[in-house]
Picture (cartoon, rainbow, N blue to C red):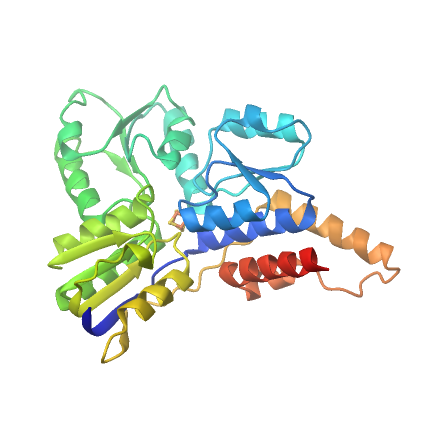
Length: 353
Ligand code: SF4
């Protein structure tokens, strides 16, 4: 390899929703004896999922796989209402780590469906987020993935709403939005679309970098919608070569010149740093910052209640009520990556005692 410089996109990697979901599962692992169950991958990243598996988390694709009474977490992508109910019945301790921005889209679907709209949902049919969202009002929703699919929607619908998955490519969405407005001039849409801030910011940063770098590396999994959107964006905005990789071992050996790097919203920063180390740029790194993100999503309300109860019980057991701060105080301060590293280190230290 003969890499001159690395341009790092900012923002990149974990978004506020992923931070919240990972930290929530960490709390579950800390509070309960293993196994803790998780319905679907907590976030779409194999390395994060493997780290949780090493901590005794069992990932299931069907709630019937959760033994009655066992703690279960539902993933950040959002789940169908019936599934949320079923998880609660089976487990008694179920925590829904859905991102609040996905919940907002669920709410839009519920309200528009109740008000008699035909809903066109733009998303990836097989993606967990799309499946969970459609399940809010399946009788009212038709899923489309492209402008081409829009042609199959009857022209004579009266009340139409256009709602989208939070993690689409900005350019794909813009094309579909424009075609939908031509076909249904009075279509209802959320004010600024349902694309989330994290998706938007990461794509704006990689647009900048793709104009400056010969090669762009996107770190993240192939089943992560926002990662795939980053890959598409890099190609569209001029990068000659684009590689999506899960880890540094997948880097090709012949990378040269100026290299741009970004990471999907569920890819951890340590992977970015390992990729930089492997590229070993002769002129070092430069961050291309399009905006600062400081969003924080607190843990789901049911988890906050649970943590307060555990904290109160521990204070009583130690006969020092009020002596310790709420565990929630640390949630905001420590990042998800740091919390996961600390948990893994604690477990290794515990197993050696
Ligand atoms: S990518 Fe957006 S919608 Fe998805 S978890 Fe992150 S903030 Fe939430």
